[in-house]
Length: 243
Image (tube, rainbow, N blue to C red; front, side, top):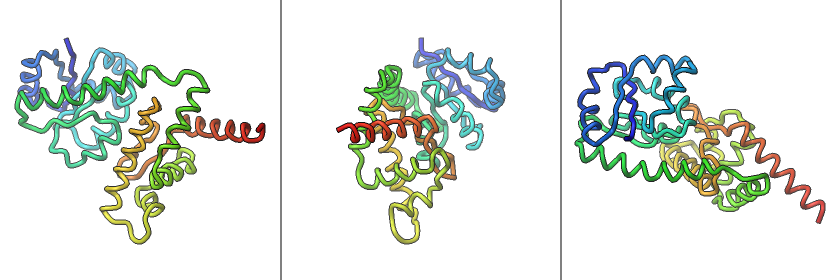
């Protein structure tokens, strides 16, 4: 049976969603105590999370709390959903959110969202669990990824890489791609570019979460990924010298 954890501030507020999930065959646990345990990085909380296939962030949780929880949970390979009207869809999806459930969704609508996003995230999880087998395969994957980038994707990625793990502001990154004053249209296009970068990384079995969103501030690459790219560039230089 699939197991679902609903993180909430009010257990009574989840009765309707819980009943619908149970009718769909899910085993459901609602908890408010785990919220603080996860936020405080308690090991016991993360051990408990391993038994769940899906975690749902209740609409009773603030956006800031949801962001903090998502950052701590996203790396565990658990499908995550937010119950809300979806005003911050792009920001949360960039942090690894699997999908959205809106308040008062019907049984059928909930079923279809979980099935549709479940197929995608399961495929991604299988690819990621396989990992990169050996340094040669890792470097080939990086080469394939870099070769597949469009002009703006390459420029955006290069700016992130040159920052070496430091946050690059959204406006700063947009100004590197487009001339003139940064517009909301530019920022929307930037979100699309970041999404495409992550997808192209996943296509090469590279973890798309190496590009990290700092909500309302900007983006940065994980230090580990920066080191991988530096190693790849050094190898490319050695290959060139030896020819």
